[in-house]
Image (cartoon, rainbow, N blue to C red):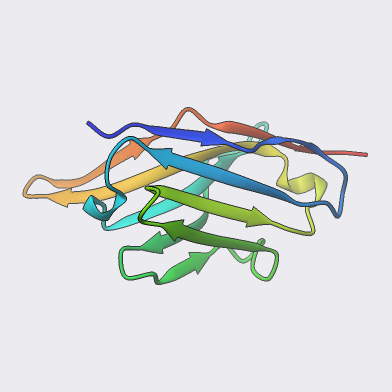
Length: 119
């Protein structure tokens, strides 16, 4: 089973930038899509951005124009470049990998990396 390991989180001031990385232990080409989700304090987990095997991307309205998701298939890694960070972006960010099988959708999750935006 492929494992996902996130890195790159930390404390940043409003307006700053961070780049999150999600390294998979196997080929990410086996997944139909990969994405980043986040869960803020007292909130439900929400989709931030996703990228398909064919490089189609999707973003939450709240991050459009500020965040960019990308993938490096050779390195089995997905990135989330976050610019113009706001305090409301503070959350635990999770990497997700999705594949399909005869039984349905199968999601694999990383353990998360904390992003804190504060002055």
